[in-house]
Length: 264
Image 1 (cartoon, rainbow, N blue to C red):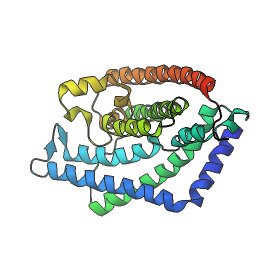
Image 2: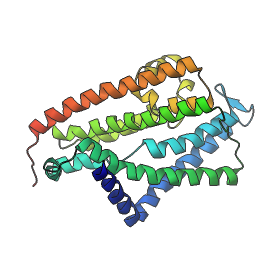
Image 3: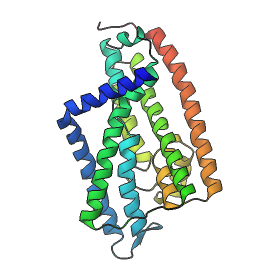
Image 4: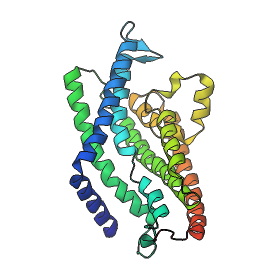
């Protein structure tokens, strides 16, 4: 475990060394945050509600998603495809590490920095914009929210990791990966609550892993489901992690057999 902690610290130092790139990334999230805030504020201006959500619920959704995005969505695993294509990946094969966890802790540093920044951003904008949000006080709901958020981190990471492993089969893995990331943001509820879509589309998304990345944790925080439903959803979330983890292991073993170290 100590070696992965060292990976985390090195990655954290790297973020501090390239602060301009970090701030550019946060600027993008601030723009998205403000855009969504004013969109939903406009939609609730006349009636105080929209698509079954009150104004305060939508504002909580917007600010809550900004925090969840920071810790759940990560971009470091993009390096995997680049390293496989360049041949730099070979150096990890001779190191006494599990590459899955090595990359997870490499990403965790960026996610941690993003989380700290996102919390500061949300607090500042709530004060500046005089926004009202729901402060959840039920300890069981908060516990389930934290559990679902942690599982969401692993679920997104596994999907992202899987997309990067496509580089074992194609040098153009970044294209499909970009499309997967874009679809993930849309289908996970990062821009709007999924249940405002048509019942058929929501029914389909409910049966896909994307539902459990953003929409489920924030819905738990808002108290949209009873405890029996929440426990059922969390069990399904864990099942998706296990299933995709198994697929990841199969792809990893198959990919290693194809890897030639081209570019070394």
